[in-house]
Image 1 (cartoon, rainbow, N blue to C red):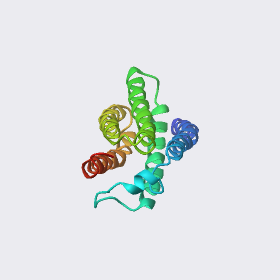
Image 2: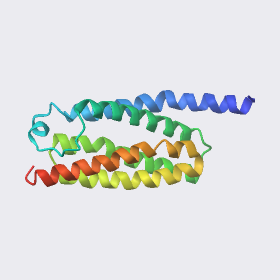
Image 3: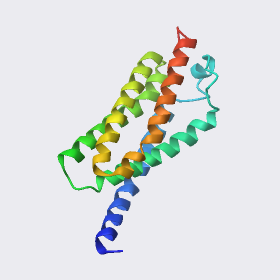
Length: 168
């Protein structure tokens, strides 16, 4: 191992020790403030699609995804400053803002259609982010793939809740 890779590893960990807890904490806060998931009286009362996973799945999946997002972001933050890096970070930040808005809109305000619009834009921004991340660090891009898959599945669930509960 040469000195350059040691310095790069330290740079990664310096960022990861901030990005992972930050993303996890903001995700937890968003969910807590909006009383997301099972246990929310409104959500418990709506008809759910057959594909709806059990409640514990969401906590496990989102924890894993937020950790992957934090690692991915740390890999990009350690890259040299450039216009590509700036664009990638703007895209990442934009989709994360929407991510943290979705729970309050869907669970807190019961705005299922707006929630669907948000998650679809979030998915498009995440796809764009993945392509920009790939220009800087392939691993950072691949770490976003499970998130895109989950967002796709969550979009379907959101749509199905609208379909099953047209007045919800």
